[in-house]
Image (cartoon, rainbow, N blue to C red):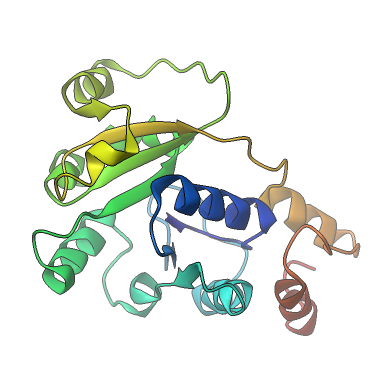
Length: 205
């Protein structure tokens, strides 16, 4: 589950845990990007964002942090990460990339996106009652690769798209940065360890 995590918050963590339970996997790995290619520069450094993710999951055995994008010298293109994962895990282990609906709707603008499904499955997180209009390219991708059962994606290592509805907590990183800019508390929006890290390092203020 990749993202800017600027900062990571309870909405991210709850989503990851619900997906972990729905898929029946041991862990979900959170992977902060170093420098997002498709959005504005983050409000904090990649090392701070990595540290906050590590703080957030340190007492949660069902979640883990993968630092590879932050530690890499390459730009944070997803295709590079997928290639690295396959080299590490081999060709037969199922790999599932988790992304939000907004990100999926821009997927055809990502570098070498047409190769993604040769490396992984894609799990798209949608809000209940979602209504989206993918363009012709993404419609074709869904028609060819979409499945409906989580069991289906474990029958092969890659190649499927599955859309799963969640009820996300109404928390956003933008909201948290705005609260900090006003000098207000972010407690209960982020884990206490992340709240403490933000205060100690004077982030977003």
